[in-house]
Amino acid sequence: MQQPRTRKARALKMERLVHFPSANDHWSSCNQTCDPNSLWTVDGWVTTNETVWDCTEIRLPCSPNGASCALSQCCADPDAKCYKKNDYWFACNLTCDPNSMWTEDGWVRTDEAVWDCGEHIIDESEASQNLWDWLLNLLRR
Image (tube, rainbow, N blue to C red):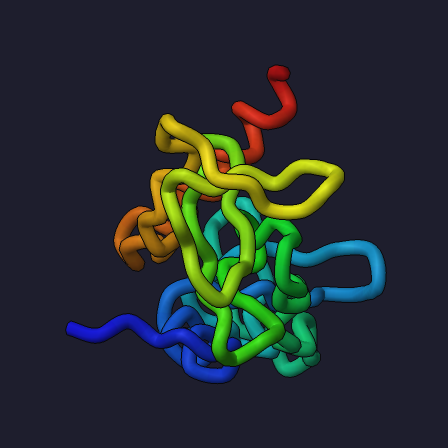
């Protein structure tokens, strides 16, 4: 199956997986679906007559070229892809050459591979867990 490359396609695909509904200006929660009248109680979810959630999906903006796309998982430039450098860095670029390295003078060729060049696409079934694992690893550094 071909994976979506544009932010719009990615957002539509991910919409089936995780919503970030907002209960108010100070609270949001990751849920697979959103019912504006659902309220969490000690007995679980109950339906109320009041609107509890506005169900607006919150998303990070897509990343510009050269910036990390590990969390946004999309690139602002529709021709760019989110390429993997290593387990800790992914960046939006138009192309990827494993033996290219960015320096203050621009891209230079190296004798050894610097980039993995795999396209950063998270499997829907593991997306939430991968995101939290990635964030925890980042915070532990």
